[in-house]
Image (cartoon, rainbow, N blue to C red; front, side, top):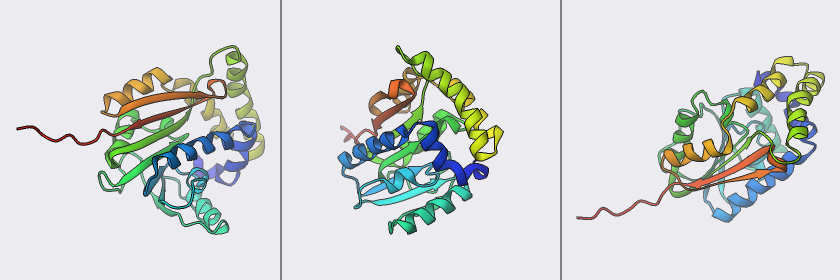
Length: 224
């Protein structure tokens, strides 16, 4: 499914979010920069928007299970003269050594994990002690604009997505997956339950999406 819509993925992201996805990814980039990492892993990298939006300096790796998406990410990196190492990978079994990266990012990917807790545990595994996990994911809108934003998510993506991509399944899947995904409180409980600390959730654009942040605990010295 993701392979079929790869050629229209960036366009549809801009249109369906009314350009807000650019702002959301910039916020992720600022959080990454604040961590001052040397090595960053962007899981579910897709066409590379998050990875290529990071400041130059750290070594950035992108992983995704969709080869057509990675081909577009490779070409985009070449056009921008950016270095981006890419690999086809299952997020639940990353080909990455334990405690080997400073920051892990994943945008609009965790709701697609076959097993959410197992996937988040795998992301935590590759973080060094003190390393930061940043998860940007769609959520169910709340507050005064909640009903309007919820209507948009349920009704506009299937229609407009089908028109622009020619794929009915993909953009029917979007609102269905958002509706069945864990809410912010549940996500925070899961992140804390797998041993991460400093868990926070920041709703964006009326709660259409949420930015989660947590870090792997520093190793504690054993007492004798």
